[in-house]
Image (cartoon, rainbow, N blue to C red; front, side, top):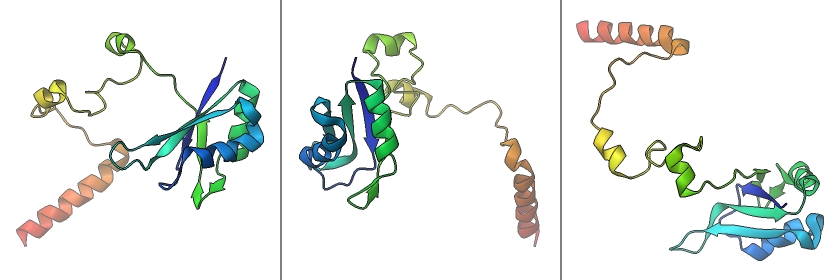
Length: 142
C-alpha cells in the first residue's frame, strides 16, 4: 500500500524534476512526485505530493525533510488526507462540504444574509471586549 505525503511551502519557481531529485536521494526509485501548478500561469501553487511504498519510508521522509530549507523555503511535510469521493461528501464523510468551507455555491448565497439568533463573544476575550465598549461609550459622550 502506498503512502501519500503532502509537501507544503514549496517555492513558486519549482518544477517536478527538482522536487523529484530532492526526494529520490532518500526514497530511491520507489517514490513518485507531483507538483500542483496554477492552470493559468503554470507556476507551482506552493504545494505538492510525494508517494512512497511503505509507512517506514513515509516516516523517514517526514523526519528528515519536515522543516528542511529548500530554495529558501522551510518545507512542511505530513501524511496527506485521503480524497473523499462525491458520494461520501453528500453522506457526511467528516470533511466539510464546499458550502461549509465557504466555497462558492447556492447554499452559501442563500444563507449569506441570515443573521445568527444570538452572538456570544469568545469568553477568552469577553473582558477585553467590555473594556473596548466602555472606551467607545466614553469617546462618544465626550
